[in-house]
Image (cartoon, rainbow, N blue to C red; front, side):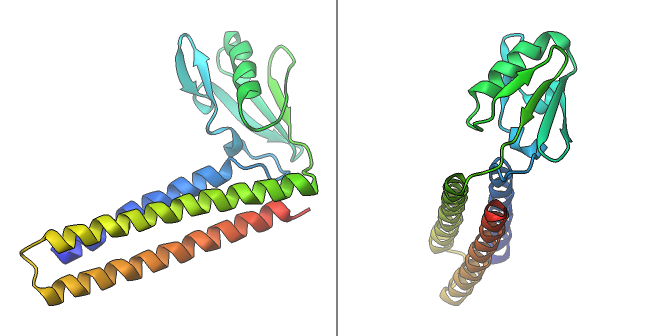
Length: 182
């Protein structure tokens, strides 16, 4: 029983790491990255659709994102959604594609982006701790385990928590370094 609790907790913690990586990919670094547009949803015939499902996204010359819609009639909606996003990059519509040139980051913007990285990392740490708390409560309520097994299971959960908190710190440190790189 203890093994299943630890395995389930590890699976949840892995999902949290994946979510963190996806969130961090949306942060501007001065380099164009198609993943920056992952959160943008476009109003497509009355329903919100992820941008990457209605258009191809490519990077040109390292700093320009080119969005080519599969359906040319959705170009205006794509431009509107890009404009409304929190990226701070103005889209340019040339009639066939939307171009978004990622500006070089100023020192102030870099600091702001590293704060955003820290915020995302802290949110993930809170989620990891919540997973630990839930697992420990489940262990405590499980009457089929004796005290020694409960103690061992809680220790395993704590080791897992420490491992994933360290992993979050490493991911955040690497992303902050990427943001601060000129």
